[in-house]
Length: 213
Image (cartoon, rainbow, N blue to C red; front, side, top):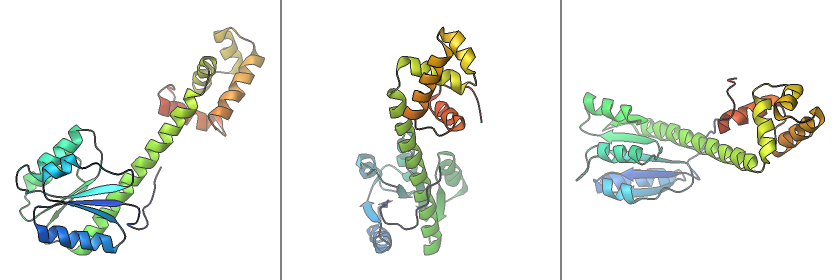
C-alpha cells in the first residue's frame, strides 16, 4: 500500500542539531510549509521524545555534543522504531555514510545542502512513513476481523486459503459440504473479503496461508 504525502501538513519533522541557528532555520522552514516541528539539541532528547501517531521523520546531525547522531540512530533501530532518518553533517565522510545507510538512513546530506534537496528528502521520508503506518493500520484491522471468527471458521479460512475445495474441507473437518459453505460465507463476510484472492492475501498477512501470490 502506497500513501502519498501531498503536503507537509499533518506530519511531524523532528530536527536534532546542537547548533541553535540550524534548529531555528530548519524549524522555520518546515513550519512555513505546514508541518509540526520538534527541535531537539541532543541524542538524549531524541531518545526521550515520544513520536506522535502521524507521518514523521528525523533530520539528524551526525556530530552532536555527547552521543553522536549515529549512536542515536542505532538506538532507534534497537528499540524497533522505524521512523525514517535523514542525516546532515558538515564533516561527512564515506565511512559515516556507509554506516548510516546500512543502519537504514534514508538520506545523507552534506552541509551546505540546497533547500530543495532537503525538502525532497523529507518528502520522500514522510511518504515512506505514511505508507508504513497505513500498512500497519490495515494489518491491525485484518487481525481484528480474524479475531471475530469462531474456531471452526478459522479452520475453514485456513483450508480455503490453502486452495482446498469444499469437499476436501468437509472430509478433513468431518462435516458436510453444506456446513462448509455456510462457514465459508461467514468467513468471507466477517473478513470483508470480496474475493478468494483477497482472502488469501489476508491469510498471508496473518501467517496462516502458505500460498504465495
